[in-house]
Length: 392
Image 1: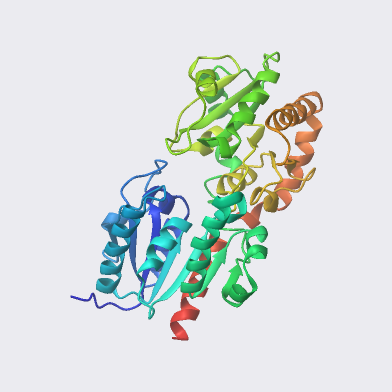
Image 2: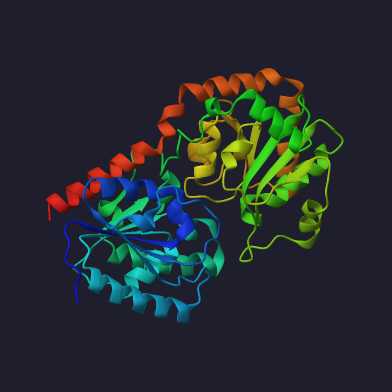
């Protein structure tokens, strides 16, 4: 039986934590505006996130579980695609908005043509692979481009790489990606007493230079290079690194790197995944995020919202957010692993020797802080959906 309701929006995303991380604000506003929101997502969460809006209590929010494979397992993809088609035909949504390449490809395999589909690619895989893998991902992406009504990308490198034949239905948001919760990631929320107590509990002294990394401990996030940099900085007893996150079985780190973060060290503090990473950002001086590929990293926006300078690479996604010498420093992602580690250590040493550099960067960040607000993204999505429904 077809579900009959007005203004039905179907959101498809690979895992529930991804929804909570950057789409829950959109869903909440849609519900407030009279829309009915359906969510198709996997039960398995990559990162544990708190549900701030308590969706299960909303009568205009409905969640269905679909087992999206994280890798390209074609049997699991086919099974998920069959289930997706059945649910889509049951719901009959006005708009289907799909996030991440695997969910987009899976959805479009058996998608009936009559539905209005938007695909948001959080980084094109063809742009970060080479050889046969690059052509394989191009095939998947081009198929998805062909089937979608709208193609949405988050960074300019991806937009420029879309073939001319698909350009008319491709766009990049006028907002800074999906933004972040600037009300949550606000340095003024945290008192000096709170920060002093948190530092003390972590064994961090008042005058230590505090570095932070937030995210999955994976090679493509530059985790090897980060730990390599800390090896070079371990002679400084007053430089500390806080790790907020954990390993990912799909992208494992080496045993040697793993052993270095398992052992209790004086300069590396591994806190694991945290429900409130903003608390740890509040005591940090510098955010280090040497990722080799991103869509448009929310965690970098969260750092900037907390007025924390960033050391990153000039890689896809990160390059869009950081201006070298203005709100952080960028390192050439084409350098070797040891060279990147050396460059990270170099910038940290510079900021340790000249604290005025951090002060200057923080001042620059403050002047452009509001542009990272999630509210801007939410408003743009509501305008997009209203426009599509009104013109249909």
